[in-house]
Image 1 (cartoon, rainbow, N blue to C red):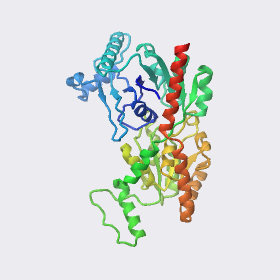
Image 2 (tube, rainbow, N blue to C red):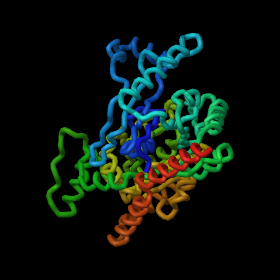
Image 3 (cartoon, one colour):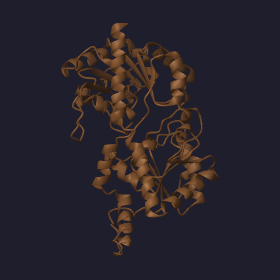
Image 4 (spheres, rainbow, N blue to C red):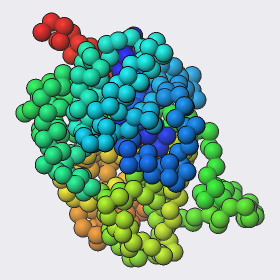
Amino acid sequence: MLTDETIICLAPDPWEGLWRNRHQIMTRLARRNTVLYVEPRLYHTDVLRYLRTGRLKLADLRQPLAWRYSERSSSAAHGLWIYHDPYYAPVAGRFTGGWLTAALRRRAMARTLRQIGAPVPPILWLVRPYYADVIGQYGEKLLVYHVTDEYSAYTHADHQALTRQQERAVLGRADLTIVTSPALLASKRPFNPHTCLVPNAVDYEGFQRSLAADRPIAPLAEAEAEVKAKAKDEPKPQPNLNHPPPIPRPRIGYSGALNEKIDFALLAHVATSRPDWQLVLIGARDLFRQPAKADPLAGLPNVHWLGRLPVTQLPPAIASMDVCLLPYERNEWTANIDSLKLYEYLACGRPIVSTDVPVAHAFAEVVRIGRDPAEFVAQIAAALAAADQSHDNSAAATARRKTIASQNTWDQRVATIETLLAEALHRKREG
């Protein structure tokens, strides 16, 4: 076990948002260590715009830079702090005081570490290569680089060559590199011999607790009540006028970031070729560079955008789907991913249909693969038909999916990470 260490995690997204692997890892490391989760950088153009639009008030400049996070569970992450850089010290350019604001940020960080009683020197945990410029600023005892995607393949990476250059610099200095897929292991290990594969996982116990709690979700719960009433030969429940009409079955769902890696044209093909199916999309629409990419779905009556749901509502929402989708495009980005959604779908026991990407083949026992739009639709139909077979077959398939999920938990992954960190600390002390 790793204990009594300080971990500074520089993250590319705010804490309050879609939970990703770094959220799961840091909450667990914070049970016996002090973790400072540093939210995305502020740039001077952002601060000026926020002041001009009223989003940022002068009083905000005096807000605390760090606040303690606590989980709603018995295993609270007592050592987890969420931190943001001071608004008065945004990232700036050479001619706009960048050297001064950088010094102010370092000073603010050092002051915060003292205030929360964090042991120093820290372990520095980077999740993106563009944080290469902070290496060495905190006197870190260990540098960890966590690679979750092929970042240079992002469609919104304006300077792919620069991204690769930054990553080589981080890989060359990292004491430990953690990757989430075999493809990433193959591409990063040549630049850092201490590169280790730790795939994604699921909070299996948390999912089962949420499923057992049976919390209703407005667009889905009334339809569930109708199905249960029909099964018991009871009167159909009266509609709740405070909520929109329930989404009928069959429901074909996706839960996760709706960004450029999603094949929206494929989803439109599914929705238009089978208007009797309801396509349910859960997650924020994060199309920064291609905002029109989701336009093929606009106005389709059987497409339902639920937006981002709280973490506690995801398990029952996923469980209410008849088939769950991994509708990824085939490109360099998706060739390197290890889908978080896959593990979450399995934890809910749901049938899964995916496009032809490597992560689907890794779980071919429980994932149907559609290699083109027609086959993708056919595989969804096959999954629906299989779910309608005898109760014994359906129950056995559900149990098998959950068993696989239970063998891929975040507690297991973090135990592996703690071992890797301990080995890296020992290696550095001895070296």
